[in-house]
Length: 391
Image (tube, rainbow, N blue to C red; front, top):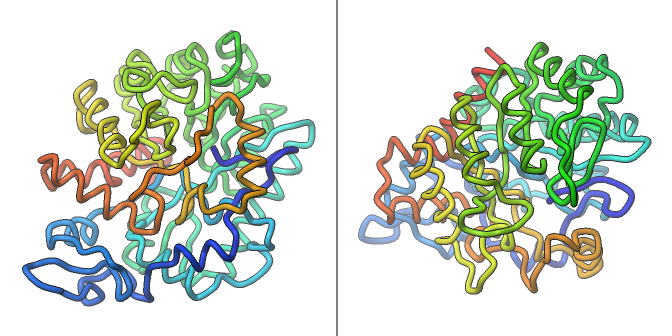
């Protein structure tokens, strides 16, 4: 749902809400940082009110945790990128257990090429100024290397490909650091149709050449916001596996941002991986909507295509959409009318820096093995990135 364009710029929450929701201490991941309280339960940080079993803590410590669609901050109109990261925010990133974030925004319009160049420069400049915490991903091996160094690896991506106005632009933006590109956002572009278009014409001839060039340079094709026919066309046309970095299952919730079983099967048959989101209206059309409902989507993908083709693409930052300022939330509701955003956009338990701990706890409760939980947390996406990028 993260967008950059004429309506919504970078959506993020207010400083006041940061203080209200800030529940984590300075502890970085590592067993020494997690004090044992009693009976084998641990706190994920010095200030966290939640306790987790040793198994959950060990899984978070040993797994490569990849969030295949996240954000450093959803609403940056407060000058987030122009100032140093606050110590509190840095502590939340370190304590989150996330080893890799795929950063992507839905940038479109006639000046998309210039805006994307600016977006990539802004993200990479910010990462460079906080090199003690973040590192930029070039190849797949950079992700486990970042974990070993105690950093969060950042993948540069886009949720639209309107900046590919010429075939040469794919190589150009690859050279500027882009490693993932969603073919369309919600609306039609020169490549294909979006998820909320009334008519889906599929991938265009121009779009087919863009996909082929992405395959050639080693850029991952993402179809999360594509329409149903465009999704299937892209999977068929791509010579390499593709990703649905952040979506949910149509079989569990009829929403334009969910994927059909046919699409999930096609993605898996090509060797791709689907990341499940925690955006409330994508997860369920009914209340209550809970963390368990998010895991229901993981269960569905596993039953449909197997454990090797599902991961996480949260589609939020460390705190979620409901912590944005009232003005930013109102803007989002007006822009995303087809999403039917309810009173809340986030799911409780998946709207704070410990969301992956909470998700892991639910996976344990449902009887997933340690090996399978490791695949869901990041091993599956790491395998996909290794296949497409090399290294």
